[in-house]
Length: 392
Image (cartoon, rainbow, N blue to C red; front, side, top):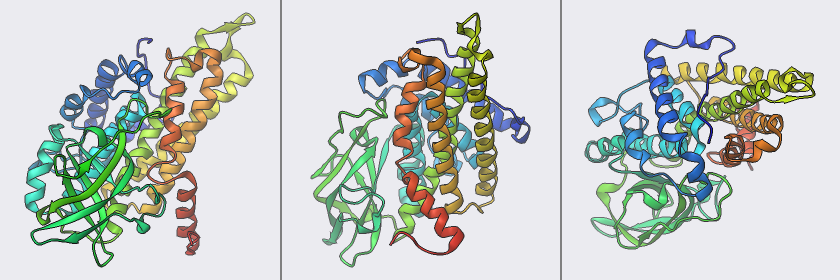
């Protein structure tokens, strides 16, 4: 593993749009990634193992639910700060960002937005530090892009409910202490339930054999007549609005995060192109290499402007789910295209663990699919601009 020499591209001087606090947060998380993530991540990815020892540091950096107010244990930062954090984490590895995204946007966000005061005070402070880790149960073996058809269900049993069903492709599942699970009641209404590890009938088998997100823990959630106290049901929402609002929060973080991959791949390719000599000069001096690099930095700059503006709208509570979908799709497409072009600049060296590019490329094959596939996000935009639902 080479020393982490990363320098982020800022072709349009976007730093001038950030506050001093934003830049301090970015520099702090970047230094943490360089010291604690970059040095170990290739080894853990090769071994397909999640580095659990980073959880404490992520909590100390405020990367778990940074938008959660201080009264509930969070740092109470704005959404541009959240985006910057996710960008820096994913620059290190998509799996690390996934761990933080799930914790913040898919576990802490619904508890903060839809939970009771008792639930907020019980769970959020410990989730913010990483003392408790969580996961989010929506996707099922038979239902991915169509969550409304979920089969997981619960029935009333006095002071508790009985939960049955299964969820899959769940980040953090193998080690999570709690799961925010979405299931239907006897009337077919969707509700969120906080399921705790140790509840009888609740298991989290790990998913093996992944070629992507290898340094992230993925698993299933299996519910076999699990008794869940009614006090663990989120009281503030019912229907698909609950899980879909969580996905919007997560997609927002991905829109920033995937650009972190793109910037890392570009920075690696640029540096390599100036060091690698062929035919008597640096390969960065050849027209086709310059074409690749120029297109990379152009697309990165466009993506940076998009997510910054989205962050402003999110801070003002004006960002729509469709706008977030557009940014998520664009950032993922940009990042995957740049990863592939950057790999070509490095030639054979690009497929080795000595550089981050191939790991980013494999990770992005998951990122471009989860929290809404590439094509589903196109249909979300299409429906928004035409007013016609093409999903059915």
